[in-house]
Image (tube, rainbow over all chains, first blue to last red; front, side, top):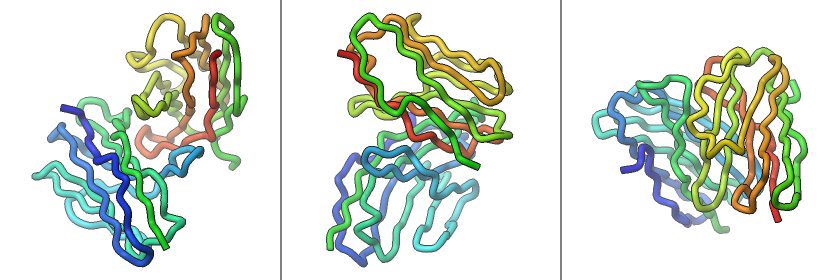
Length: 112
Length: 112
């Protein structure tokens, strides 16, 4: 089992819709969770982080964490074509708090 | 701050040649990470430093890879001799506390 799993996609949503990106992780003791956005040919860019169960909102982005289910998600409201990118989920394990463990990413396509 | 700086941005070399990639972290950041990204394997952590000291090099593929951080503002990743399978994008990232990591623009390496 991979430590951090994401559906590779592509996830296609129409402009204006809500895009829901999901991530599961294997280490129940994981402490911190991050979402990175990576445009094609560019470097990963941190867009959200969450440490506690529940929701965290930042503009059009909402991160949701459920530690009991070992599940973290990213919701993008009012999706725009400029949101089209690969979204990487990353987790910090309880065993090494210095290292991010990345999923392989979900490619999101927002069509007009 | 200019962010994480990497050079060169692109490198094309022939098999067997030595390749040196360079990174300047964000000033004040104590952590520096080297990653490799390929389509097949995604984003892989190669090695990371804390206060210029290598902490975990378990991701370094083999002895052909080496990394140094002689001071807080400079790090190198060296491949000697290079092989075609080393072709990838190499990212450097830095972090203040080890969690929120900021990536440089990457070096796209092609080994012929």
